[in-house]
Image 1 (cartoon, rainbow, N blue to C red):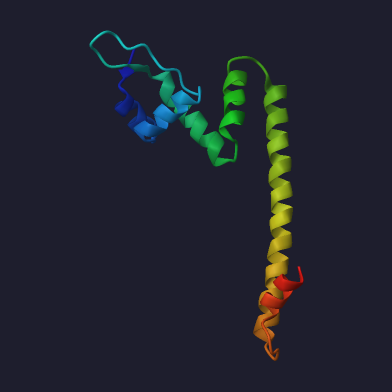
Image 2 (spheres, helix red, strand yellow):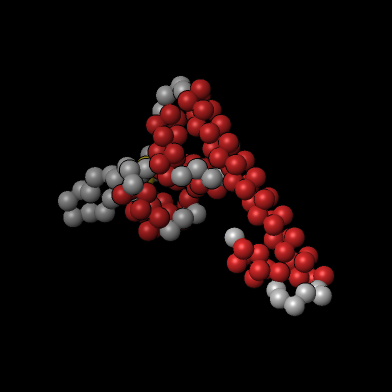
Length: 130
């Protein structure tokens, strides 16, 4: 059984030691016992847990949601994991729609500015009108 120090664990998972400690404080990674006068050793499986957390973060899951996913990982609960992912997808789609609206408004304002011929700035005027 391979056991890793926190530094080796962090390197193997591609994160910083402080990231490991932060995840421990948040309850995402277990804190192994510290033998008297020695350092903590982590199981090799902790590398997979850290990578799981980072991949979940990369696609937009919050740490609270990741904590739920980690619990679901220990039991056959695909339906619950799917519901969590579907809710995240819905939230992402809503944010994307809002950003599309913002992009359209900014494009119009920049286009009005580029068109010129106005005494005052169309961007400032639009923001002042509310």
